[in-house]
Length: 142
Image (cartoon, rainbow, N blue to C red; front, side):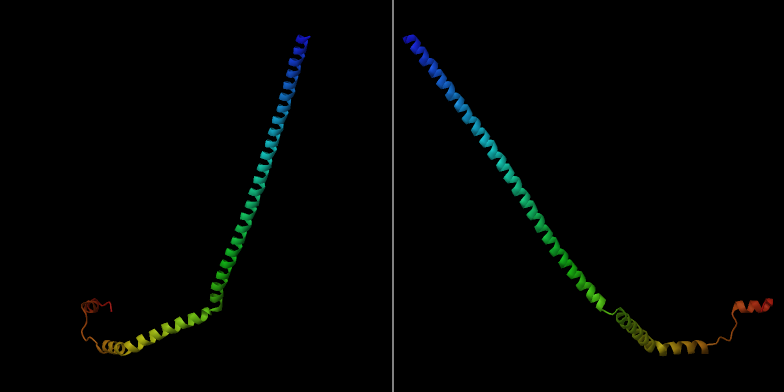
């Protein structure tokens, strides 16, 4: 009986140990599943945060682009506005008048010299014939 009693104790002990090992395995499997779920949640949260940051960066870039466009448009309008407001014919009239004034000054400054030069050339009449003229008369071509 003692042998059978010892056998039962040993068998019972083995059953208890097996049950504990199975329980421990279940516990470890549950821990692994829980860790896996936490990892998935962490990855999901990271993806959401990344998308949110990308969206925020895109919105910020669009705002900056809009501000830049507005600034450039204002600068363009300012430059073209001044040019459009300026009268191009007035500028042309001014430059033409300046050139006419310069020509008039040149005329006034050189008028006397030019008249004297023309009169001196008109009054300076050569009374001699050139060699070419003499030859033409001799041959009778004139």
